[in-house]
Image (cartoon, rainbow, N blue to C red; front, side):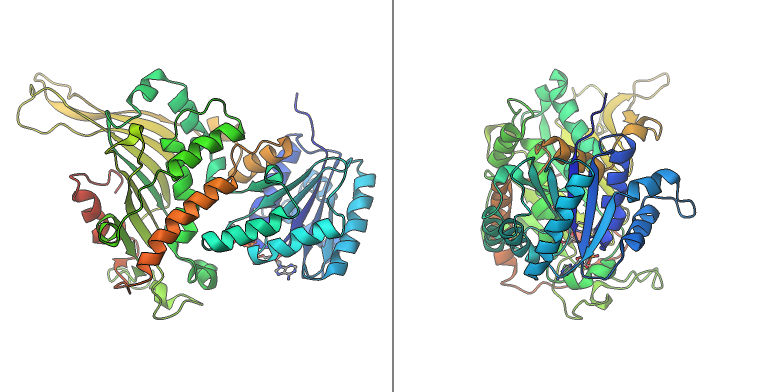
Length: 487
Ligand code: NAD
């Protein structure tokens, strides 16, 4: 039986896009499943002047289908209160404390508090300091902090931010979100890898030629041009999501799935990434920026024409790279990564190409690739591509696919990313969150690349919207004799 966790959420950035699109629906799901029930309340706080009634209306709408707001949604929203203020203003925290204490009493929450920092990270230090100074951090119950990306823009800024937050909270109280870690198929990766001796037996450089990770987006920067132009794909996607997936794919089996053991193994991988010289970087990394598509001129605009983007911007909207992980397990097995905006489709997929020394019994024709694929989004499933016999009178090989695609019905109980992760925070389980040591190692690696890239001006734009990125991305992998499995 599911037991509710008593909890008071204080959401900084309660009027924001993330809160509406992700957090309120996730909390509602947890409410519907009884992880949150009677003893929970939410304070939304942001600059705008909203009344409780208006806020509750916004929350009910956010968790409902377009036209119908159910009684259950209204009941859920009745647990929400709104307080307007500027987070830089100390008085704000005094009134916030009064409201928090009274809701704690009203809903018998017993001091359990979750502070959700869903606004610009530049405020996190100030918020943490004030939470402590104004005693919003409680003596009884738990205090947990959920932190959104971006956590810094390089190692020094991430460290500064971390030091500020750590003046108030211990590492064990911090839950740094990377929503990829909440994805059903990333969880499933652990099950498939560690639940089958067969898989674990080939999960090394002797049997794996290369691993390919693609996180492609079909959208451009949309309204985020201002932020994105100061960030770029390397910081916005590779530093966090891509390197997190690499570390999970490559890590040694942890002793247990507890946060401490998993972090330890992930950090070993992130610290084993090879740092390239300038010359090696030019050979092993490609950056790109999207242009219009001459064949579909009305459909797309170039990145440099996007709102709030510098018209001479050198910001990359695409990165492909060849990573080397210097551990005995991955000796000579490259990990190719690829991520970008305005690509052909929105897809997250991991393709593991296996060694295939088929016997020379089948004539001249080349055998097809043997590939283990993990489809993360939008399809969710696992496929193994093998060589089999084409049905007929002669022995002729063809590629056959053994596949398990999860159906909508099977996924009905699968939590959305944010629901899964906030549920973990309620349980105090930080396995699927990013530890500071992981962040530190990944920022150092990214800073090394960034530093070399920033010393030269790239020739942008270099790929048409709706393609799979610059041609150089295909050449990058072709120079090792491989090709992207996902096209
Ligand atoms: P947003 O601009 O829609 O919302 C920002 C919120 O912060 C608003 O509620 C605003 O009122 C509040 N705010 C800003 N300055 C304030 C101040 N001085 N005092 C009090 N409140 C203030 O942004 P968002 O898209 O909701 O993103 C929030 C954070 O989450 C950002 O750090 C973003 O990078 C991160 N994030 C967002 C998404 C997403 O899908 N939107 C995804 C991942 C991470």
